[in-house]
Amino acid sequence: MKRAGCLFFAVVPVLVTAGAYFVLPSDSEAPTTKDSVSASQSARDDARAKAERNQEAEERAADDKLIASLPPGLAARDKKEIAHRIVSTAENSTLDWRSSYGYIEDLGDGQGYTAGIAGFCTGTHDLLALVERYTKAHPDNGLAAYLPALREVDGTDSHEGLDPGFTDAWRAEAEVPAFRKAQEKERDRAYFDPAVRLAKLDGLGTLGQFVYYDAMVFHGPDTDPDGFYGMRERALETADTPAAGGSETEFLNAFLDARRAAMKSSGNERTTDTSRVDTAQRRFLQAGNLELNTPLEWQLYGETYRLP
Image 1 (cartoon, rainbow, N blue to C red):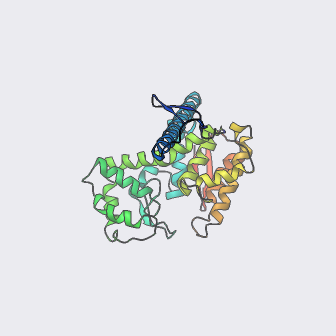
Image 2: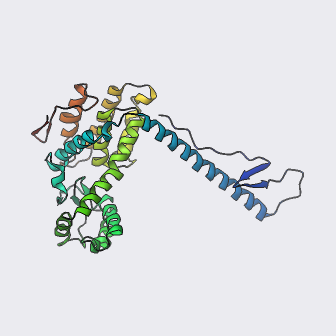
Image 3: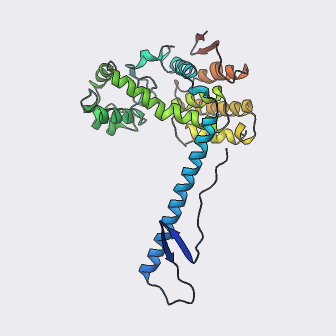
């Protein structure tokens, strides 16, 4: 779906903003003072900012209305469960994603500790965001004491301030129902909901929504070439989305091509394995299973998984 650009106002003799009228000087008036010019410029800036906010709100309202008119797709309970199970086979080598709340290890991929049901990482901000939000609701939790260290190591693979107790603290907290719920909420807020929303706006069906979700989890919601939004931009260079009149299959192939290239260029043994693209998502796409209907069979890292 094409987006309208930001709305900018031209300078006109009378400007209306926030219920007040600002009269701008004409050429025939006496020279204005620096303060009056500054006030006029400030008024124009305020009006423009308000117009942009209004336009964004109108666009979001229109998007919400469109999404509400569409089938639930991956957001349907059974499809969402399928999505989490497939992602879990890639992230934790198990169909039982609920067994991974307490999972934590350093995979040697430069992202510090990877933990929990969505592979939250100490080096990529999402784990910090999770613990901060959880601590705000539950101040006395067992991970709160590690917040200063988590902020220090954010963006790095360092364990400074985390060893030796953080991994045990994570596993212990993962036994707490509130922390399990917090992991699910953060997974949905950071990855599932925005991926499904954008996929629907792009005109993609349930499989396409899953393709976006898995990419969002693995690559993060970043705009750099190897981030989710960067890969989507590369796909758009070779194929249009269905919402823009393109073929769904062609666009998804272009997106998977961009994703595969990003994974291969990472230089890390773990992230260069493209099984989740080649023998899972691409297989579903080649079978024409655009609604991600069961039964499903796929391979990851040499293991075969099935959903009846």
